[in-house]
Length: 336
Image (cartoon, rainbow, N blue to C red; front, side):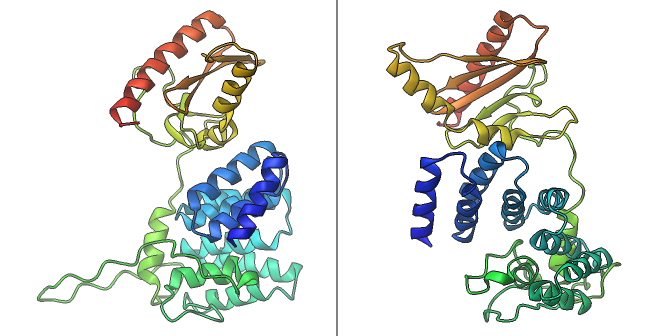
């Protein structure tokens, strides 16, 4: 596996537009390097937004991180692009099952089997659902938690020779000592009780519909206009740190934008050095409806500011400079 990662990394370095990013993200995910896998997947999808297998890998990473709503969104996107994608059907079924919706999970798995009657992974997953949540991995490790076994059965049985991924959720806390026994957890209304019920209940709570607006990050730019929709601070790895960027429909696209900007600072620095221009201060791009300002903050961090095209570029630069000063002070306070 390490050799695979090195080889795939070298291939992607030679051709950043290569679709091999999906294989690299999957290899990193299997090594437990989830943040790196997420960054690679988002960066690749920024170049190839209609690549079904890329969205599938992204969904797996989100599932490993326990972010089931985002995993379901990514698998749903796969099915929009490739309606017969078996892995996405199993993935959607897995999320629905963890949410307690055994009926819709069954529908997804039956659809997968209708498309491919020989899909043993889907068949085993369907058996899991019909048993009401008993672990169904064909070759379970002695201490494999139910959640990991379920994920293996739903999404990864075709690579069963690889190590079972870590559990999606921590195990339920041990019961506290008390004179009377603790009450048993309430059974899920959509699925029969099972040994995995506490974990499934926690997953269902976690899987409540996520808001469409930007995710909550440190309020670094509090007081700035559209502080969580048009101002984004990211680190040198392409991970969003503060602020946020929202799409026209209000959806948070900060992570994808940050991944797409990874490496911009080093490229700008290299270009400025080649042209003997000194250190770079900012990049301005004018689009049809907005002006974008990108500026370095400290060592490796980057600031992206979006302003409406009606604002003169000079004012957009002044606004970005204020935001950069604020971001630099915050980073210094964080010891960065």
